[in-house]
Amino acid sequence: MQSCLSGLLFIKSKSPSKNVKSMTKTSSMASKVSNQEPDITPSPPTTTKPLWRRILPLVVLVLGLFAAWSGGVLDLLSFDTLRDNRVFLQNYVAENPAISVLAFSAIYMISVALSLPIGAILTISGGFMFGAWLATTYVVIAATFGATIIYLAARYAFYDLMHAKAGNAIRKMEEGFSENAFSYLMVLRLIPIFPFWLVNLVPALLGVKLRSFIFGTMLGIIPGTFVYASIGDGLGALFDQGKTPDLGIIFEPRILTPIIGLAVLALLPVAYKKLRKTKSEGTLDA
Image (cartoon, rainbow, N blue to C red):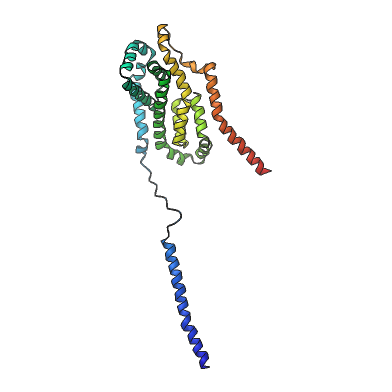
């Protein structure tokens, strides 16, 4: 009897130590877990900028456009102006090549950023002053910079607002366009169906990535730019004959057909993706 009592006392005295050990082990594990960093970092709080700050870049562009129209800037650039200042322009470019290129590129970039409808005659003027190949290079770079300015201003001002108001409708359009954004931009730039300024705005509102916009614009405007720059390269001969170039020449079949061919090539990746998607869906259904 005495041995049984001593055994029970021994067990009771031993069990608390086990509990203490288990509690200590549990608390140490809890401390380790609490010290670990979470797998998902909390996103920083989003701050909506005031509306006036978002639309300020677009307001500046609109004011610049209004100033250009009201100041008669569009009337200064014409074939008559080029004819009357032909000798001066050619001599100035020959004597000041670097300044001429910088001034022409700046004027072209600003005109595109302000959405002035003088791109064709400016490109012809560039061909007249620098030749077809150099003018194409300068115009493509300047036009891409100007278009990017509009893209960024529109995206900064209206992208969040449109998504908040339009909801699912704009998201579906965005998904359909952004999946093949580069190909679609190439087609819109190659074939001048829509105004240049409109093609600058729509991709910004549909969430097209900046890289796709820049490269799609740069590559897409090369053929049309070269056509007008080539016209400018031969502008002196037309002046000697008392003629002026036809700005609608790009719509002639001999010029438009190759450009449409390039547009079809640009759409081939889109057709391939859709065909592949259709085949995969048919395989899953079977």
